[in-house]
Image (cartoon, rainbow, N blue to C red):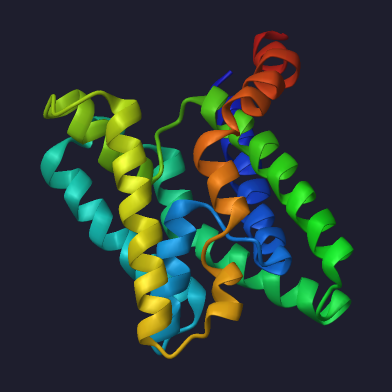
Length: 212
């Protein structure tokens, strides 16, 4: 059972990372944490994967100090591999598809949403720890007892999106390019993915985990 959980967590995280590449191709915005990372990437002279690793390591130190309970397999895979998979998937998709038309961007957005929910269902159900970003809201809400998780998460997501947009504009970015940082895709990932994740958990990942 433990081996199955590890495989599910690894698979789920890799699918989620690839889905971010699809979101970046769509240019309708990415999830809130990736919004902050993309904004940082505009001002920090490092490749996305390395910058993601450094930012995750800083948040990991926060986890070590505040509450180690949430550290697990997922935490380390997210910290060391996700940024590089995002970078690789986006670069590869750009080489294959170039700059997609509006209908193509919509297809990338839909595919990104479905895959992100699909992957999330796998690593959520595996219960092998959480990502460094997820841990922040969990620690504030459950360990420090400062507000309910859903409200803490909304606030942290808003901070990430606003910061990502601010960094993008500070780097000289134009409003026409803001879709690489925030947009309708960001709104969808922040507020409306729960039901689809739940669907995949109920019909795919939960039965898979319970199956002998």
